[in-house]
Length: 93
Ligand SMILES: [Zn+2]
Image (cartoon, rainbow, N blue to C red; front, top):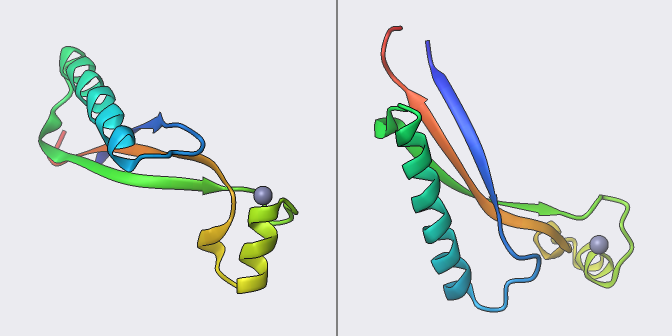
């Protein structure tokens, strides 16, 4: 049986400097891992994934309009930018 938990880290809506974002993320992840460990979670199956949540498909803001014009969904406006932390536990419990 695979146990998996996930927590989201939400970062700034419009990151100006990736470096700052990453530094912030690292601090938050560190804190999160500490908490998980305190809760007795096994962190050996830890996975980290960056996620971006874009505006609604029907959004007509400048960025989304541009993305539509260029047919590139990655250029859509961003609601959230962050990291997901997963633990996928092995074990047979
Ligand atoms: Zn939009």
